Amino acid sequence: MYIIKDIFSVIFTIFNEMSFYLLSGFLFAGILHVLVPQHIFSKYLSKNSWLSVMYATLFGIPLPLCSCGVIPTAMALYKEGASKGSVIAFLIATPQTGVDSIIATYSLLGLPFAIVRPAAAFFTSIFAGLVTNGFTKNEPAVIPSQQNKKEETNISFSQKIKRVLQYGYVEMMEDIGKMLLFGLLVAGLIAYFVPDNFFTVFKGNTILTMILILIVAIPMYVCATGSIPIAVALMIKGMSPGTAFVLLMAGPAANIASMMVIGKVLGKKTFIIYLITLVTGAISFGLFIDNFLPASWFDVSNFSAMAAHHNGGWFYYIKIACSFILFLLLANSILSDKDECSCSVCKGEKVMIKFKIDGMSCNHCKANVTRVISNLASVKNVNVNLSEGTAYVDGTPTDEEVKNAVEAIGFEFKGRI
Image (cartoon, rainbow, N blue to C red; front, top):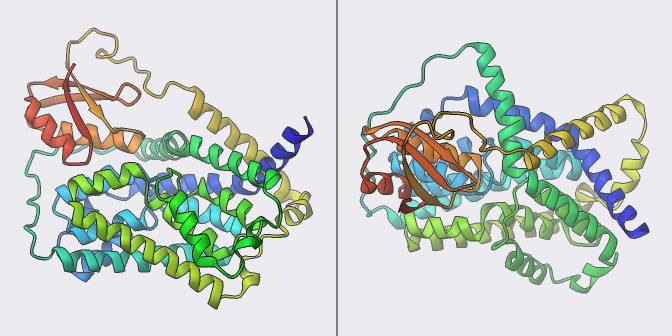
């Protein structure tokens, strides 16, 4: 009983430190998603040049896309004519450093980490993009789709505000809520069960530790925000800040699902470049942190003491209120049926073509599949059910049309059902 109490005490401490910053980050994420026109991203990414790579990186760093959500977005950019270098830069920059994770990084790891993390993503993304463009410059460019795009009618300011809140506090919560809770649970288990001197066995051999972390982090799916409490817990147990940074960088930017899609859509050569440049960037910046930056900047050994010290004052009670609100939002994201719908299609009042589509795992995936099928001239309406992995289509599209549309952004078309 005491074990469970101690573990949850650690989890609550971390959760309470993050809650205010996470809620702020989710709000900024909603603002970015709703108020910044998405079509401008692909406009500047089509040329096989350093400037397009720079634009892709700058666009990607603040965007609130999770590790799986960035894949269909990147594949959509590629389909619309973005160069492979731009796409790779976008893939590396985006999942590591959304505004929510940057703010959460500051809340738990401090200002130096919050600065180094996006800076490393920036330079690694540019390096990866330029290398990719150099190796693929002779490959034929993708011709942007000329399908009729259905423009959305103007919406009022109040509707935009509603969408900001809906996206930030409902859709994003559904996408990363489970991973955030998983990260907190892992952090609690590490804090309790891993001996305080565990990582001293690797002292003086940070390269070996980084390689071990990469072996675990690359295939593992963990979002940029969910990886933060794990990194904190490991650093408290003696892991070097540079090695923790490798986890923060490699975990969100590379996972099995992402790598399979990159290899399938962009080709094996581009996939190999992506993986090598990502690992090189993570280890390089990890070594830079450990060897050239003051260790005091990244000291989290007194994390619990700092949390206890701040257990008072008006800001502490604000954090308690934020923790309560965040808990309710997380509970809603896990317990609610996000695919429940009362439209005529789901009620069975209207017969539609039903397609099976594999690979969708978040609301970004759902939105991108909906978009590419809706863009087909033969389609009137689309309703995508995320939990079923299906798309209900009103219209007369052929299987080949739908297959080409969804596979162009990295999903697997399984046919009519």
